[in-house]
Length: 530
Length: 67
Image (cartoon, rainbow over all chains, first blue to last red; front, side):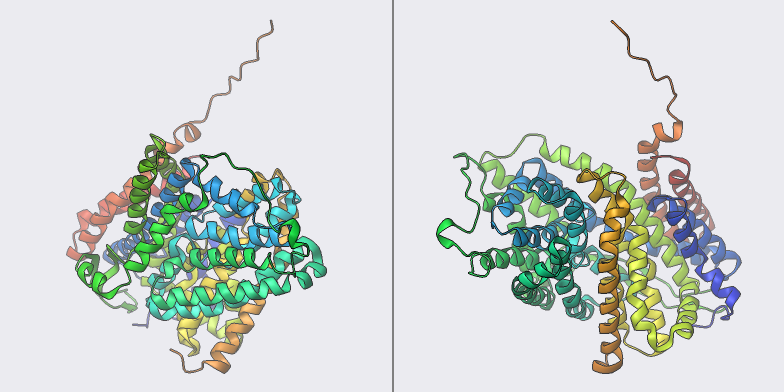
């Protein structure tokens, strides 16, 4: 490893050029991820050949590594979006949402439940803007001001993105940094405690200022304790793809329990929840939730050693030879790169859940003919542009990696920031999410840069990789693409800056707290962690 | 009865064909994938060049089409 182009300011600028092009086209030309990703890929290819000494063979291998990695992530995204669309088509998402709105009469708890817990649950099952698109309009119907609904949803679910969408961002950070999930997962869960509690307090503050923060504190602290420990436990179990879904669901349940305590329900004789007459044949919450119950059961089953051993041979991955640039930057050989196992990868579990869910709904007469085909068509049209954005950016990132650009960038970053790097590090994740609207894309763009910089500085690569993903998650609350979803679904078209101004201070404050936490971890508490 | 004025503005081709072109670009990446891998591992310049052509065409699609 190492060698490559010498670190000079001009070379560093050239190495950062693909990322600058990406930043510039998104910020100033307002291009989407596929367009910006495509032009950055061209720039990375040209720089790889003419400046960093990559030959066609090296670039072909870097591109196919990028495609292997994208395949892994895209299968999860397509599977999660397909399952969500199937459930939505048969009306189960509406039933789940309606159930949540009736849990409590307390306005503050309603706000916390919807924006902090339920939106995170939606992130767990779908992601890609669905939490804001689904929850914010429901909150408006419940009587919350549109700007509050949009801002609380954006900030409230920003703790849940890395493990959401069946863990697509979590798997990405593993793939780009080559740190096993069993190591990075629990550390991510640990680092997410601060964003988790801070987003809860932020939601309360947006809703009703310091008075709401004080009144909501017991519910926020108790719910954070439940959700934080569940997030860590799901990682400990090896079921990180559920480390948003289960904690968020438990958070909803905790909120429901808290709403029945004397803190939030003074007159219990009048009832603490909203009573509503339902038609006799209406779908119940548990029935609506069947596909996700199946998914949870399958995910836990997949972690049982006896079962996983049976499916262990059913693994696919490509072997890559060692390569070297003309300047001597060497990348080692890879065995079963970005391996996909039929049981440990979330996509087969998602498809199986959709199929078993179909059997249950069909048996109970709730299946709508054509729902699967319709869901498939919607999934395709939703996912193709997202996929092209991810493909181009991942390929660009791998070209930068294998030609030594990322390594050069990291050396420059380490020289410039020194011991303050852990504080700056989550801001890099936020920047990636702000630009691309995606925690996954942010991890692709900056994951290896963070790890390489950590190596140069001699600090924990595990913590810095985890901090990248945490920053990427928090940064989604200010991503223009997500803010646009919030304003479009709450009738605030053209008032994006109003929503952004509400979310920005909370995002920056949480990022700073994460940075200080990371600094304490790498320089004080866990100095010997690899 | 008054007739609604017809909007005769032609739809630009980049907008009209965006969806099929984006789908084609998506598949072009996956066709180029085995070519890039085999070209890289077997040092086959025909496969490598074919994959570069496919990737470049696929990357051109989002640049020349409009939402």
